[in-house]
Picture 1 (cartoon, rainbow, N blue to C red):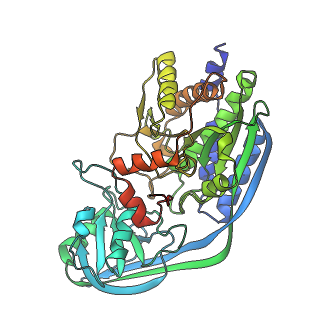
Picture 2 (spheres, rainbow, N blue to C red; picture 1 turned 180 degrees about the horizontal axis):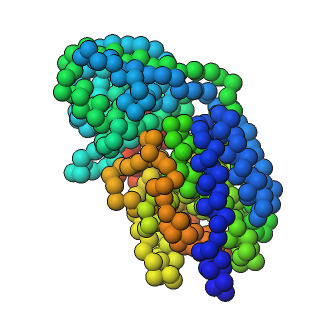
Picture 3 (cartoon, one colour; picture 1 turned 120 degrees about the vertical axis):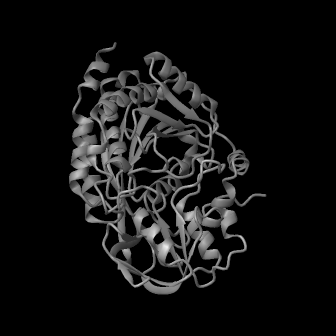
Length: 441
């Protein structure tokens, strides 16, 4: 029975696919690189699973050009200094620089930001009660009438952070937005606070772009299914090894391991590698809108695995999901951390927000925020094969448990998910970004 453990720990399948993905280079949503990565993932899944195919959909096209920030007699223009945030509108604007520090909601209250260039930090202080997503800070600036948005990274090493703006209703953001390196942000705060600065963004914005999701299946042909998911796209500034090459590589590895244990699966396992996650969960939103969510038994979303050695699972208040993780942890005498909080920032969310039991599986990296993620430094050398192999064993066993006929997790009412978001103080941010999906009182 335990032979699969040895074969998993010595497998090169998943790690080999990770190398394939990082060697593609630019996997930005809607690009040829994203398409090549999706095709490679389809072909890898076809080795172990049935009906491996691509499902294409339309997206808003956006490709990065050069960006500049001119301030205090200096021009910052190198890509290790300043980069456009994806789906920023193109344009050049000027205004007085206002440094709002962390950019907490209260920092925007009463601030005179009309026509100003607003700079905020990518992090939040330890004492603050929740994470603030980049887009939340962006839309506070938009609401306050700012002319442009500057997102200052908190990680040293001349690593401007990327990450999209815009939302489902308006995919292109309202005001030009750039990410700057921590060092550039510090220089701006010291030399240009209150002075006129200029933000210039070049971007190709077009309407005829497409992306694609990758599908494959294992196990019996049941109506109910377990979704094992990841996203195949990445940002154009790096290899995207951590975000999310490792997750898609793990998806392929789980297809291999579960194929060897297919007779243990009581429920169909549906593998899904989404496109266009990094520009607003577009691929998973497209799939969820075209799927009968009542048939989804559980979602196992892999986004952020292998960054650290210990897996971390957001379980969104579903006690049965916590219990399944505890069983795996006990069976292998291996730590896995869980949190019952809502996590609305990866592909599981397009299902969980409507009450589908779902995990966001990431890992404990020991660093604040994304660390190397969303920067030039998201490269393969940051990851370890040991962590990949250990986690593939744990996640294989978890997937088998989810597919077992004895596992059951009742769907939640959307009203209960909404109430949890309110209780966790996350609703305000989702409403200002245009991500609040509920229209009930």
